[in-house]
Length: 425
Image 1: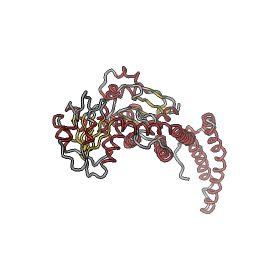
Image 2 (image 1 turned 30 degrees about the horizontal axis):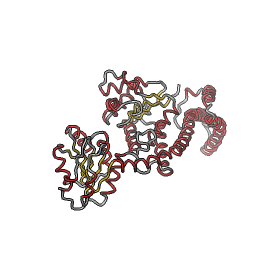
Image 3 (image 1 turned 90 degrees about the horizontal axis):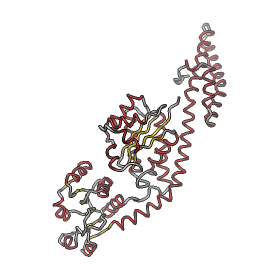
Image 4 (image 1 turned 90 degrees about the vertical axis):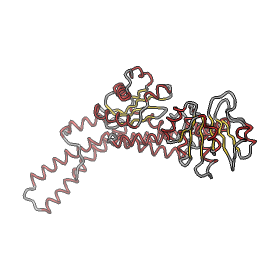
């Protein structure tokens, strides 16, 4: 029985955030799970991807061990009733479907924000974790490098990755653009709900920025700030912090404006101060723009920019899917060749063994020149004998009909007893 490439996926499509955060794996857990999969199931080609939107395990095995892997995840996370979570997992046991899913995830087609640029780096890190543990064999190495090349084509040949398609990322892109001439811009993030947290995580794209986080619940702000390496202050100090900030991002829920014109007017603004209101309803008075040096952008301005980009990305999807299909076809051509390689090597070894034995029997008294000449002749004969079965095996691969021919050649030459190591000759 041959190994099948399989995928287990828990994502935002079928699992709410409360479930995703329970199942999510950090780097240490991924390392530990990879080791368990290697030791318990002797799996060589394995990839574990865990982000805020998905936790997925890709693996090659002749058997469907999806439930066993989910149980191992439960063991790793200390979840006694992990079987109750089975309904949230999609299991892909079809080789091509699992491969296609990994391609789509890696280029951003399956992302919550279509074309998400972060996912490509997350997939690279997942691959590196497998490679570090020698859990990436020739199959996974070739697959991942085909995916990386596909990503490159998508960037170069389509508009799928152009611009910012999420409000939070568009807000960060705006901040980067407007602070490009400011050395180490001071950014204050007020509120770390879903969008505020997303903005904070995207701020890593402006590495020189000095980011401070505040929230009504201090512990939530501190946990996020510690994770990202940002400063954190108590909510009561946010008005004072505004005075010293170049950028103020507000994403809090309040029935009346939290930042008023009177408040902003009381601040000294030597050059400029950028306010970004991501709250609905709005938490910043629109009239603050009357204050000299103040720039105000609200969620509608930013969403408009993000929506325009998203429409371009959606229009590019057919082109992206075409590139993916071409890449998968190329990968399958290689995979088919790999399928017959062990048989070809065993056949070469079987014939070489016969050649060496006969050379050794009949050339005991021959001189060096005779041995060299007969060596060349017999090698040439062996190559010509090999040519037809090798050509036929490769042709059978392209027809998806190699199994029968492999069995015939294996039986004919008794190849089960022959090593498939490569010849020196």
